Amino acid sequence: MKIAIVGGGFTGLSAAFYLSDKKHQVTIYEKEKYLGGLAATYKATGWEWSVERHYHHWFTNDNAALSLINKLGLSEKIIFPKTLTANYYNGQIYPFNSPLQLLAFSPLSFGNRVRTGLVTLALKLIPSSIGQTLESQKATDWIRRYFGEESYNNIWEPLLEGKFSRYKEEINMAWFWARIKKRTLRLGYLEGGYQTLVDALAHKLEKAGCTVFTGKSFENKYRKDFDRVIVTIPSFTFIRMFPQLPEKYKNRLLSVKHLHALNLLLITKERILDEVYWLNINEKGFPFLAVVAQTNMIGENHYGGNHLTWIANYLPSNHKYLKMTKEEIFDLYLPYLKKINPRLNSQFSILNSQLFFGPFAQPIFPLNYSKIKPKFTTPLPNIYIANMDMVYPWDRGTNYAIEMGEKVAKLIHQQVI
Ligand SMILES: Cc1cc2nc3c(=O)[nH]c(=O)nc-3n(C[C@H](O)[C@H](O)[C@H](O)COP(=O)(O)OP(=O)(O)OC[C@H]3O[C@@H](n4cnc5c(N)ncnc54)[C@H](O)[C@@H]3O)c2cc1C
Image (cartoon, rainbow, N blue to C red; front, side, top):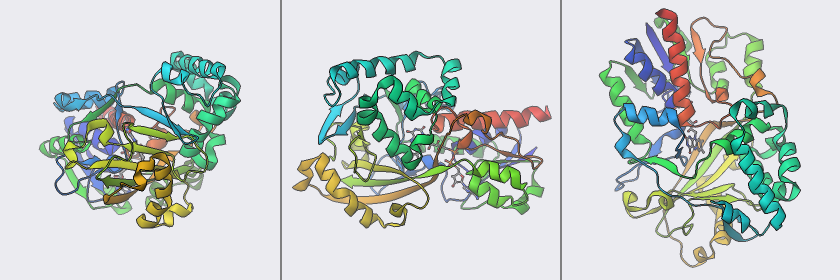
């Protein structure tokens, strides 16, 4: 069959990998000049490795991603460095990697530290069949009830606020449960960055005879040239691409709200964070939600000895930061970075910086989302959609994009055998 795949992110690449292996004639259309989608990378002159435009790592239980890495013969390139996570609260950095460190988190009373540890453990132990049923409850209500007000105010509320801003009250508990359930202490990364996986996939696809267009959007009129089309782009763009879709269906897809990612990558001579890889900002009033130091995960040697740190945000469409220049964003963030690390007042040399925008990067999952979750099939014959609105209740990630790409590809392949 002749199959077009719209989007060269991990969903599209994974679907293409499966379908070309089954001898279908696959064509990928990617509108950007590069593949990888939200996990695409950036490489400055003199660097040995690329780095993701937005911070990326895998968990040790990301089986779909690990299996693909294995199939492509890249297992020896995967590394699982030890990383440190911490919370910034009331002017202090609190390590947050182990039960003992939670017991030392003085912004909570001792009783609430123990309670937070026990409830987190209970969430980890809840099996998936039960965890998914929590979607009928609001995460904020559940957390308040079981973790308690103090834990909600000092730990979880700032994190939900950072990740979902004004939508935090809409998020259902199944999403929160899945987030806790899935997280592993060790994180995975590939030598060379995610680009290593993108390159290996592109190479395999080329060898299998797949046509890959980059810098080329798919257009409605190309439909007639293909037996099937798999669309992996955000629903908002899909609807504009196929205006003939029924209004009711369009409105249903559009009812899923999203936030956009805005990440400022700072390339510096000195470290911005001393040891911590991932710093959650639990203090109210900060203009960003996390600081993520790539070079505290894998060292600076592969980046010409420079330190790489993202200042992270998720923002709604009309947010004023999305209209600001890189320089304005930097000026806004700098005083807060200096609060986190006062040493930056005297010692701070930015070598380079990049501002990366990730459109529709975080769907909002309201109560009982499983009932409105879109399906792969659409009202248009032979047109399929597979995008991150369908990754649920697990937090969207390349692992699930790879899994979903394979699922939608299998569905199509099975129709013809
Ligand atoms: C800030 C941030 C941090 C993240 N952290 C992690 C992490 O730590 N670990 C992890 O595994 N995942 C992480 N993710 C999630 C991960 O990047 C995504 O889940 C995954 O890349 C989604 O892949 P996708 O192919 O479904 O979608 P996308 O990557 O969005 O791919 C869609 C592609 O379609 C293309 N496209 C759009 N319109 C058109 C058109 N008209 N014609 C042709 N092409 C078009 C786009 O350019 C894009 O390349 C993170 C994401 C963000 C934003």
